[in-house]
Image (cartoon, rainbow, N blue to C red; front, side, top):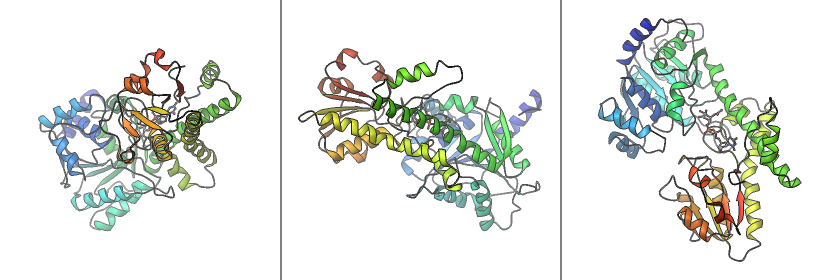
Length: 429
Ligand code: SAJ
């Protein structure tokens, strides 16, 4: 935040740090955010609907894979600065970090945001700050105000031109990259969108206690759209790479060489093709834009179609290879949606393996170094087994590289000889 001297910044910071912050949702965003605030001395309460997660956090452990987060949580819990609970408590700040999925028809589903707001509303006192961190369709932060107003007609709510409200409400979208969360949480710039300018300032004062990147203040609707646009931009660019991979396949040209050469141009930077786009952000957020502007979001919609069709193209390639063998053994390397994490949300790798299992094309040997047990969706198939990397490489006729985990990059290339190799990430070329 521009304009604050170091001394007044420190004084404000100390005043801030005595506050209690409740974070709703202790997932991939809520837990690192909780730990970051707790490590700055705040009294942080994590409100979770799953009792097993509450128990894990309160014992100083974590339930997700994210580098260094375990140490930070352990330190915060043992210092008494972070605890998890099922019940919401009165606080100075309420941060909503719950999932924002979509429904069958790709319309946004705000039920978890509503649920959190319903828990927060009865506890609100004058001066409280409510922050929505979850990536959300345009208008969600205003919707939160409306929901609060329904439960709390006694409160003066913020409006764009009203700065004398009893509470403050802002959208501060998270922008961290899974796998690099703790560094990005601190270093990345943040967009802070207030319902009113005062709401934005209040939220910015809170985030400046640990964010080293710049804080960019705006209104809530712009902040909502800016976040969606970041991920839609990436989706469109990955779709370009994925479309290119299909074109190259048809023309029998190596897509990786083509991209490498084209990227030598000073103003060209083509992303990497892969088995599809996964995760809870890039594969979801563009739909929030499409839902709000159906007739206009044509490129964004086409990119979604290309990226959603890519897992099927990979499946067809595996099927064609398998059809040339009798009782093929197929090794599938990786299930998560990207490298070196355990997150399987919207994972194209998982979708491909599920499809292979359903079609029963042969024995499936799954290697996923970041999980202990196979996901439930694969448990009912007798021909599917979780195995060690080395065993899969030895036994398989077909090796399908689905995720570029670091363990797979180190594979002895000799083991690939005489096998059919389908490398969707181009790490063995
Ligand atoms: N992917 C490709 N080719 C590429 C890059 C990515 O196929 O060249 C695939 C990945 O394998 C993965 C998917 O795209 O399946 C998304 O991965 P990612 O690493 O690009 O992004 P996420 O979903 O892990 O995190 C994104 C980030 N957004 C941007 O980079 C614009 C992150 O900063 C956001 O905080 C996060 O979404 C979010 O929460 O919205």
